[in-house]
Image (tube, rainbow over all chains, first blue to last red; front, side, top):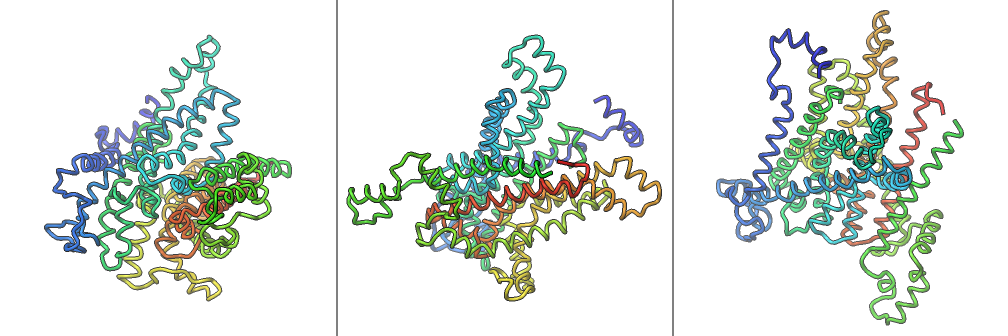
Length: 291
Length: 313
C-alpha cells in the first residue's frame, strides 16, 4: 500500500483530499446494490404484488401492460410481472450454486494439481480436453443426456466451468511455490497440508472471489440460453430464459413478452459483472485501470 | 520451427482424445437401448440380442470406443436416429450457413474491436476510453438472444431497414447474402467485440509505456505510425491469442443466434437434435466444433512467429 500511496500522492494533493471510498469503488457500489435488489426480489417474490406465476387464465390472454397486469399477460393468460419476479429465483440460485460448486471443486483440483506432478499430468490433460469443448455446447451435451431439472442444470454448467477455475488455482500455486516464504516453509519441514492451508490458500482467495462473480454471471446467461433452446429447466419453473423462449413466437405482435424478462436478465448479469470488475480493481491494484 | 510444429501437433492428440472419450461416453450413457430401437417395435428379446451382437453393442466400453474412434478417423460420424441419414451428410448440408455467419462475425468483430481498443489505449482516461469500457461491460452482460431480438425489433420491424430472419447463400449475390447476416453478426459479435477490445486496450497500454514508444514519439514520428507500426505490432500476440480463445464464445453463440434468426445451420440442427434426443447428431456436431476450436488455437500458436520475430521455436 505504501508504494501505491507514493505514486498517487501528487494527484491526491491536487484534489486536496482522498475521494470517499464509494466514489473509488463506484462499480462495487452500483453492482452490489443492483444485485442486492435482485436478491431481495427473489426472496420476497410472494410479497411484491405477485400472483401465482403458473396460474392459467384463458380469458385474459395477451393483455397489454396495464395497472392490473404491470407487464401484461402471455399467451396462456399468465401474469408476466409475477413470472419475471419469480424468475429471479431460478436464475440467481443457478448462478450462485454454479459459482460455489465450480470454485469449490476447481480449488481442490487446482491445489492437488499444483502440488502433485502425477495428478497434474493426468488431470490437466482432462481439463484441457474439457476446455476444448465450448462451454455452452458442453452444458447442452450434458443436458441432452439427463432430464430437465434444477440440479442437472447446475451440474451441467458447473462442469463446464471447473476447468477454468482449476487452471487459475494451479497457476497461482505454481507461482507461489517459487516464492521464498514457501521455499522456506518447505525447507523447515512444514507439512504439505499445512503449507497449502497457511500459505497457498489465503493467496488464492482474492482471484477466486473475482472469478466466482464472473462464473456466476456467465452461469446465469448459460442457464438462460439452455432454457431458451429447450434444454434447460422444465417449463413448469418460470425462469427468464423460459419466459423469453415462450414469448418468442409472439415477439412481433407482443414484444413486451420478451422485453421485460430480457431487461431483468441483462441488468442482473450487468450488476454481477460490475461487482466483479470492481472487486478485481480493489483486490488487485496492479491490474486496476488496465483490463 | 519444424520441431515445434510437430510437438504442438502431437500435443493436440491427447486433447482431442479426451474430447472423443467424452463425446463417446455421451452416447454410451445416453438413456434408451439403441439395439431395441434398431430392431423395431415387433422384435423379440432374441432379435434384439442378435442386433446387439451384429452391431457389437455387447462389447466392453473400450472395445466399442476403439471401433467408434476408428470409424470417426475414416470420416464416419454415425447415422442420425431421426432421419436415418449419415451425420456427416447432414453436417455437410448445414455447414455453409454456420461458416458464413461465423466468418462474417469474426471479420466484423476484429475490424470493429481492434481499432476501438487502440483508440481507447491511446486516449486512456478520455471519453472514447470510457465509452469502450462501458460498452465492454454491457457486451459481456446482454445475452446474445436478447441482443438479437432487440436488433430485430429496432432495425427489421420498426425501421424496416433489414430482413427479419432467414439466410441467403452467397451464390445468390454478395449483397443479399450480407444483408441477411448484418443483424445476426452484430448480435453474435457484440460479446466478442467486448472481449477483443478489452484485450487490445490492455495490451496496447502495456506497450505504450515502453521505452521504444517514447523514443519513437520523441524523434517526432507520426502518431499513427507509432500506434500501428510500433505499438500494435508488439501488442499483437495477446490480441491474436484472445481472438483464438474467443472462438469458443462464437461457437456457443452460433447455436443461439441461429435459433433467433432462423438460420438453417449447424446450431439449429443441434437444437433440433436435442429436442428429439438424436444423440449421433449431437456427438458429431460437438466433435466437429471442438476440432475446429482446437485447430484455430493451434494456428494462433503458430502465428506468433509472424507477429513477433523474437519468438523462435
